[in-house]
Image (cartoon, rainbow, N blue to C red):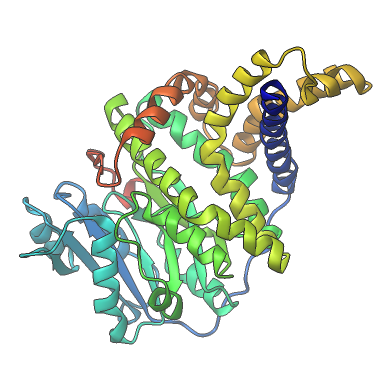
Length: 410
């Protein structure tokens, strides 16, 4: 009986890993054609731009400068920097750059990005803004960002995510991560937008209508408040549009310590989000035949993918004398050997090269992408650390890149 149950579990895990991978491979095919873009809107909405910051004195001025340079009527947007228990000169630097400073501190006020965002959003909403945009202290916005977001809102979007690119690529680690953004934009975000699915949120370059921002306050405890918000919106039927031409530049880690701190926090937050929202996502998908919720559930479940692969491999070995669906397909289907090799090569080699060439990425990023397996050896310790960490672990990443928007945009 135990052997039979182990064999059943082994085949279920194999089916999950194989079918979810095949699903995203097929989805990515839509990335070879451009996604539709909204028409230029005649009406211009009023925006509040929120930038949470904790001890970001070195970069906050550059972030505010990029927002002040947005190609949008100055009277139709305000910049708010939320200083969250800062002990340095972040508030002074933000004010000097031209932002309105909201101090999230004081007796009984707990620190945390989610808490700061929830508090500031509630404070700002009565100001009569049509929409709220969120950025990080280390991010920069392309001058056309607000105009594009305005077009998407006028076209009916209630929530939107801008296209994320890296602002720094001076070292190999940053280049590897920068190349990953380009591939993800082309073969994940673009297909979702074109096929009517929901884009993924990335913490910066996000835009919500005032109605959505009021109805869905930020979670105070999740370490990946953007992912938690993404799944909560999808569960409640709010589609997140991908605004391809609303570009936001993010700082990538340049040291292994920075990368590990960020990735462990993301892993912990992703596990917490999956625990909260996976049942609800699949329930909505079944009850309402909601493809957005189905894709959201599959995406959310990917946080267990590494653990599933390890468990599946162990069960395959333990039940090697029992029926094995992948081995059966490999042995039974005509041309299965070549098909399996092709399915492995497409996402690992051919697709990345095509995406980077289509996006006219420099040769250094093309070469860097194929160094990603070097980061793969860290997946097991990162996953274990994410499981063991509590939800109070923040793992703040030190931001050191001093890139200005003028260095990226002519």
